[in-house]
Image 1 (cartoon, helix red, strand yellow):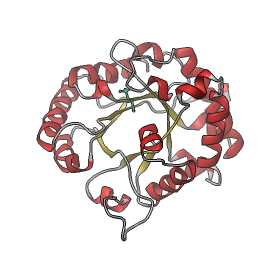
Image 2 (tube, protein in one colour):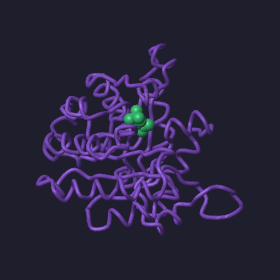
Image 3 (cartoon, helix red, strand yellow):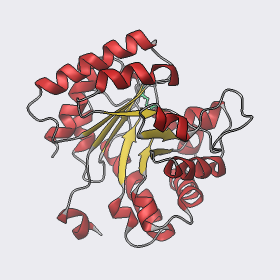
Length: 266
Ligand code: PGA
């Protein structure tokens, strides 16, 4: 597996999860700032893939601001059904029609605050693919699980439940985000070694669950207090393919430094 991964590098991806922040006007302005930084950056648009994930009411304004920049538009959640009596929910087809090509699925805030289960996350992954969206599927252990030394067990359970039954081709159309819950929004970033070890557990589990060397093929992002100062050391780990960035994605200059670190990591 190691030799295979060395032959062709997986794409690098940096995704910004804006969470419940900014209005459409503010989001459009932030996206225009990023588009300007991208246009001025000689390393772009070659690498990496940059995805912005604002709240639903911002999608149109941010999509307009990103047009022609090479950056991509993503949402933060979707409902698994195609349509119907699900007040307040949004379908994948609606997101695609609004210009999204990506969607975050199973973020730990949704798992913890809205009670999303592994089974629901699995259904959302499939719904995203049905509707032509690339799902960025989040996994990761809570602080209590981390302190109880249960990280590996939790990751194996989440990956097994969510990816079970997908073909190699289907799995390759997904992106994993390893986000230890204790690192999200806390300023306590995982060490590069901790991220590497978790990513290796995820890759080994994907090999087992999907087969066909899926583990080496999938892009795995690290998320949790990534910022301009720590991104390069995380990207230096060959198993870390990019980042899902929360707080530091809300300010154009800091987010672009993370994108530049991914570009420099090659
Ligand atoms: P953070 O959030 O970068 O603010 O820790 C990451 C995330 O929740 O995706």
